[in-house]
Image (cartoon, rainbow, N blue to C red; front, side, top):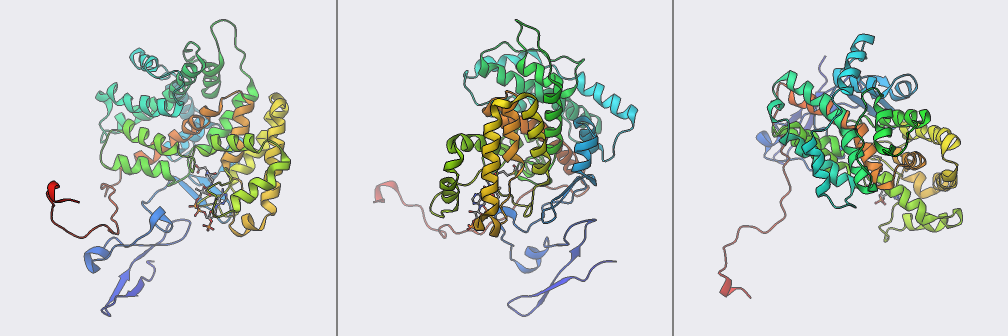
Length: 431
Ligand code: CMC
């Protein structure tokens, strides 16, 4: 049954009807697509505070209740019972795989991990201290120069090949970026290893000695990748959808998403949290930093706090907090003081009226960096790790967008506040 339309009255007294559409979960939406055609007005919503940009069947978030569902499954259940590759299959295909589907998917991803040697040589062109996110976006963008024969966006088989390739090769690219920064030789992927085990060995193995994979480290990474796998229409995912809506090739769209993720208000926050904790240094300095965060004249914010959608708690943060305890207990005692400092900061902020009134809670990135650090992953690689997990979400959204029956290029409008039309002034007449 269709819901009753919203009725607005225009300044000339005529009535405007805005049809209402309901999803399976979440608030209704008003359809405003005909507003300009019928009324010659646009809507204005900087930052998309109340604007849905698409229909989607992938992920649902209820920010008030702290609910996150991938294809209907609560993230807590997936974190407890599933694996990253199974979640990746779920996001891409809409259903949990059967055992044989999972085995086939796992084998396909495992056997696409190598990079073309030409692509590997790119890394010798980067400066030794290039930020790994810069290398990641550049090398992923350049994949379109290698796979142009399988980039037909309207071909379902080629879309699948792209999905498997990017998922399989991202850890290899990430590890190559790290090895350049570390001044160590590149370590080739090993297809006998699982997704996170392989990533660990590519990051940390050296030719001079055997490398033993720590199962807790692999488990922690798998969990972090599950928690980062998708988050509906966030900044980087919307960027991928928007770039992809022009019909560009998928590698370029993902490279755009990686660039959007890098910012400190988004995926770059995990790196920023660690820098902030180091700056705070000691629990006795917490009140000073909390006061800075509350000062309207000071741009400082408590990194890892607040979220556009979660206004009660971030369910991913709750899960990661527990994993922090496990990882630090098993392998990162030297990082325990940092975690203790984070817990102390959390305690102070959660009791503070400013943070309570503005619904600011620790988000996923408040704790993820502590785990990465305990695993020996350098700070500059934190956002790269986020990107590895989020890639499957970007791909799922790109595929959803590209197969929409009414696909059209994303093209927002604006409220123009520039000069009105004026005539060109010859240079000799300008003062
Ligand atoms: N510390 C201090 N004040 C804050 C913070 C913070 N971390 N976050 C928001 N506020 C204040 C902000 O100053 C504003 O106050 P007022 O209403 O007086 O102007 C109010 O809370 C609302 O903030 P906003 O910037 O309008 O909210 P938003 O929804 O646009 O931004 C956010 C959300 C995540 C960008 C923001 O909370 C933030 O910058 N947090 C720190 C960065 C961070 O941790 N980002 C990771 C997000 S989770 C991972 C991901 O999705 O990528």
